Length: 131
Image 1: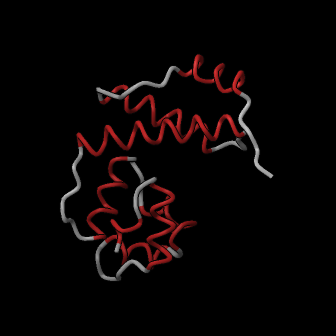
Image 2: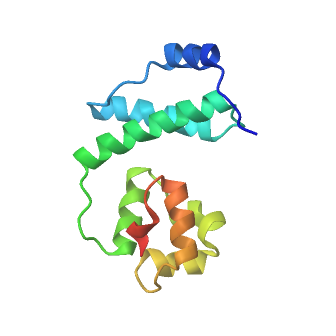
Image 3: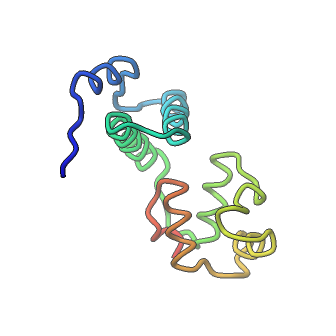
């Protein structure tokens, strides 16, 4: 069974949020706020489509303005945490105990494939950044 998006509802969401290519840091912050708000709720099909659009716009902006170098996985994690003003304690429910998180963030423990997938989903980036 294929579910279809209600075009009128989706059109209303587009009119309300007016997504467009992101060109400034302020626009990026606004887009990230919309993404976070949408992610925090149970979404309709139309809201899922809107979320996907916003994520694409944010990714496009960030790839252009914050190119990722060949950083070590723990350095990439540190960078993403800094960009989102997160502390190690904020990752307790994602990576495990405080001790594990400390070791991962400081490069004393490698990031497992499972952890990389969870981090990729959490930060909306490719899990390959953490492997």
